[in-house]
Image (cartoon, rainbow, N blue to C red; front, side):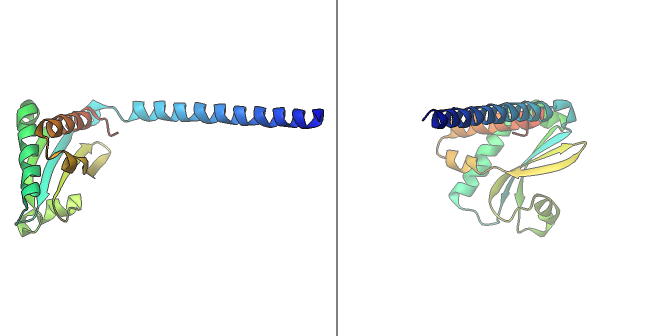
Length: 155
């Protein structure tokens, strides 16, 4: 019986040590990614584009209206300096083909592009669709997201 107790303690000790090592690794990894993903001097420009088709439904129109209002209200200085760009892009219009291809857009979406010395990164934000019914929540969310991208935070 004492042999079984010793084995159980040894097994429990190994499990605890493994868990502690795993947690330490996770903490160190998170700390490293936080420091490398927040460098505002590295962000050259942020683009916010409302991609849509020529014929839009109410929600698609509203998505673009709220995005434009949010950007104009909260980022006038950044727009003026060229650090932030906002626009509406018609994906099925040949004149918008280049930008549509760069972002990989194929329909209604709100996309954010970030230019750094390392290159260009585009992301589609789908959470804004769930906030269309609450303009204040939409604005707060999008404002925070754009501020993060302008500061170099890509999380």
